[in-house]
Image (cartoon, helix red, strand yellow):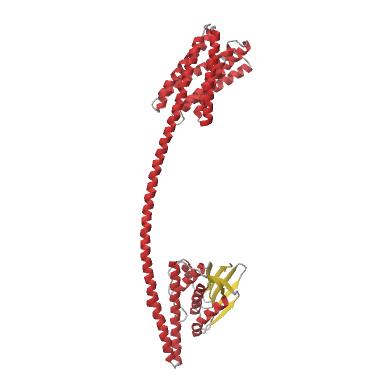
Amino acid sequence: MDSMEVRYISTIVFTAIFSVFGIYHLLSFLVLKHRILLYYAILIFGLTLHWSLYLFIEGRFGPNIANIAYHASLVTAMLTTFGLLKFTENYLNIDKEGNPRLFKIYNLLILLVIVIPVLHILNILTVINPLLSEILELLAACTALVTLILNIVSGFLLFKTKKFNTYYLYANTPLLISGVLYVVTWFLMNHFPINTGFIVLVSAILITLQLILFSILIGFKFKFLEDENIKMQVAANELLKIEVDKQTENLQIAKQKLEDQNGELVKVNKLKNKLFSLITHDVRAPLINLGQMVDIIESEFVNEDMKKLTGKLKSDISYKITMVNGLLQWSYNQLEGVQLNKEKCDLQSIFSTIKKEFEKMAMDKQIDISLDTGCETLLIDKNMLLVVLRNLTSNAIKFSENGQKVVIWSNCFSGAIEVGVKDFGVGMDMDWYENLEQRDAPKTSLGTDGEKGTGFGLIIAKDFTEMNGGTLRCESTKGAGTNFIMRFVKE
């Protein structure tokens, strides 16, 4: 077997070896999606194509094929150089922010390895200028050699940045030697008639060694990246644990505050119950007893003037008892929770009840209470409606002049029902009512006969109306009267 056959076989063997490496790294890229694997696959496939051209360059398949292969070798060499540049740039993390000068040099070389083969192909397809071809071939060889040297320089410059940069520098040694041998061989082949078979074989062995080393390096780098990711995850978990512990501590503090507040609420609740008990037993009970005593005294009187006096006293006592009952009921609803008992109420019957309750109070001021039942029924809590109407009617009588009229009314609309109490008395200050809507403390006011009012009645009326899903509004003009309107959506 002569040297030509040995070289032919060795070219096939090493082309196959390079192809296996290229396919392996291309498949790795398709699975792992890391660009470094793609660039390395480009490097290897460029090298494989370039190496396979030796099968044709030596003229085994004719001079035309050899000539095409010779010209194609520049393109494959630049493809290999492009892959090497991008692989090194990515592996050593050379970027614009961290290494601006190196980044510019790499980009310049990448531009060259793209432009040179384009010019070479255009020259072959158009003018076919031999001098230009030689210049481009020399420029391509120099670019490849500069790329190899730049890789070594980059490794030295970034030697201490990461430990894998050190390994990269060592692994580049076979590639550098093979690259120098290859460039020297190319130069000798073009100027001297020498046998370069042994040099090419050594270059192939060195390149194969370099491919093995780089493949191992990539594996170690991915292992290193995985370890770094695990460390970052552990650190993130530690930070998360610290944050969780902090939030847990805050929750414990909040829980303790809540428990303290609950303890305070229990104390306040006990105080509230004592207050209600005081109002019930020390205020309401004596008023009821006083009313009963007045009844007994009234039965003993014969004088009409005295009976009128005791009657007015009874009316005042009854009103005070009603006010205390309403205040208690409202307070319980505010503090114990609302218990609504809605039912279909006969408004005519309820209006009549209110009129009867206030008959004596209205008679004393010669006020006529008239009923206008435009709507017969309403779904509402009956007791709450009675409390609201009592308060509104009491206020209407209180702030009406002698001989005027009070109207308790209801109206039906397409989607709502309105219930109200209207008087034609002194009217009220709307600013006072707006303050009431803002939950300001009620203020004492005097009626037309000096009757006292605290404003609690309107607060109770407003709250009870809203508890039943309605709204309470006031229409009033000074000197022309007041109209309180409850509006409920039909159910």
